[in-house]
Amino acid sequence: MGVNIDSQRDILGLWVGPTGGESAKFWLSVFTELRNRGLQEVFVLSCDGLKGLPDSAKATWPLVDVQLCIVHLVRNSLRHASKKHWGPISQQLKTMYTAPSLDAATVVFDEFAGQWEDTYPAMTKSWRDT
Image 1 (cartoon, rainbow, N blue to C red):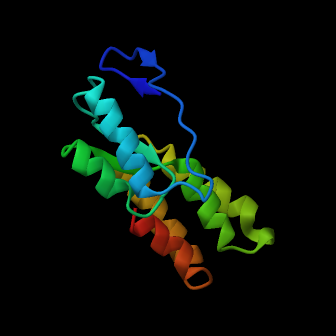
Image 2 (cartoon, rainbow, N blue to C red):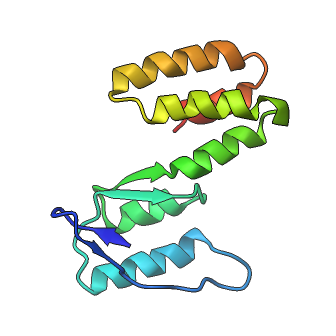
């Protein structure tokens, strides 16, 4: 799905990946097809963290900003945490990703990291690396 500057949505296509699973090479072929069909520029691409996908997108549209989908970020965070902590972690993450500004989100993240980093260092690292 694409959204243009006027906030109009359009389905750009549906693709079925190879039997062995998706790959950056597969997505490069999809991106190339879209470019060849007239999609001149992509400014933001939200994805699931597939290795190599950002490189494939940038090879097609050099100015693209590739961002990890928030659902995948939260799911990945909970994967690193004990189930008993999922509630408070999810609530803090929601406060962070819905913050009204980068400064506000940074304050929430600093509190989040202060509370959880010693217990779940991989979880806070995944947010820092994003």
